[in-house]
Amino acid sequence: DVRPSFRDFLRILRTSPDLDSLSLSQSGPAGMPSDWLDSVVGSGVDAESTSMGSEAPLSITLPIVDLVLAFLPPDYLVALLDRISTPKVQSLALDFDNGDYKDFLQRISSPGADGKRSLLSGVTALKVSGIWVSDSEVISKAYAEMQNLNSININFAHVETIWYDLLHQPERCRLIPNPPKVCLPKLQIFTTSGLTGEEIRNLVSERIERNCPLKEVYIDEEDDVDTEDD
Image (cartoon, helix red, strand yellow):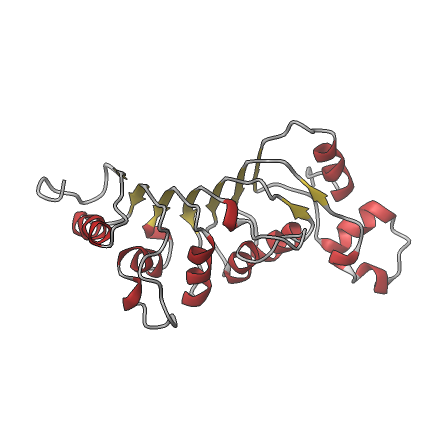
């Protein structure tokens, strides 16, 4: 009840031309698409117009380079990204705890609201604190979109194992047709939590053998990493 209407949300963004960072954690415009349309054109619209959703004049392009999305339901996020274009995002942080985020991950792996490249294609730094997606092909497509990614930070305790498998040995992911030899070819900085020392060591060695070595590795001090692994 304290969130702004979609109309006010757009007004705030449009009157912030120098905005370069946006964080939406349990926050954002109130309601869902039908409410967003009402807030812009008034409550007198008919049911057919209300159902138009993404065809309504409810869009904006933002110049932000840093985007944080956390603790928001997947259908809400998809609807929001259908109306907000962020072609300049370079740093993306995701943190979700409940729900299936397949549709959301597909959305940011597909052309944006402007019909051009996907949100992920321009990202150079990604932090994933938690996201549940069980579809291996969707995760693989997300990796394929991030050809410019230089830095990744993943909490492997809150993602499917496929996120590790694709970084380690993508050809062993049997559910993915024609897996690449190397995922994230420009990756240099790897930050992890939720992996064992052996898993981290194997990943580092494998990337070296495939001529895509990691330059920096950061490990959660609470993870099980013994002296030999270090």
